[in-house]
Image (cartoon, rainbow, N blue to C red):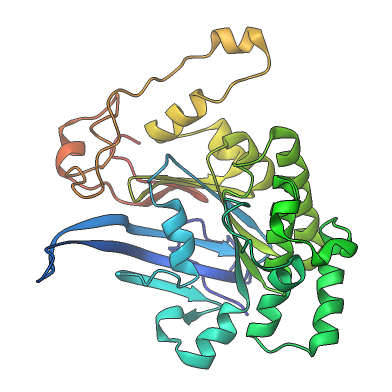
Length: 339
């Protein structure tokens, strides 16, 4: 499917490049209710507040930012686990808001998720065979024997012995549990997977194994990833493009090398300055950017640019006007008055 991408942040440079996910002005606001007998809305939590980006088929887009900035909410909204308050999400050109019933279920089959916590995301009362095979059962794929064979195949693909399929999650280590979660996400042969901080709960050595596994699976099955993470070094390793979020807004989006070598937004610069460099000489010469204050509440985000309360180069315009999300260089998008 050829998709016109002119005017889309991070869009392909050629109109023939295929967009798998196209997010436009996405908003996810959660009502804050009060009252025991008569419940009423007293405020609104603006978890995601108008972000625009896309994901091309076969690529990995890394989504980074501080805790609570809306990364996981964005991933869940794309999968329709959270209903967007505004904006649109298109999967292969189809607006997800227009899909209902069997059509939505069929589309969801092509979009899966790997969860952050390998301990909490697996049902402790189900065997590994039942956990990995549950998507097949839900989507009515194959008979019992075919499902058992598919589970064994998936366990081999992610590096686990099918002999252990009758065991329960508590009998596996954290890295093995995450492999089980990956096998479950692959069960129905998806095109797109949201990786919601899949390595943050694991030891560093195990993180490398899981990242390598994800890359191998992407090459083998032509998968497309939205990779959500805190670790900027991990994101640079696995991602083709990197998007930076802060307090529900998109700050910057570009090619991974461009955003690391030439960051434009002051928030991106501050994040990258906190990444340690293994060369002591370079580390001593590097300028550290220390952000003062705390992240404001998404219940009452600041006027103008949401980052102006902590920005070292903020001016009066930043306090009054919301910066435009614009392409300042080919493929390099930023929301900042000072750029």
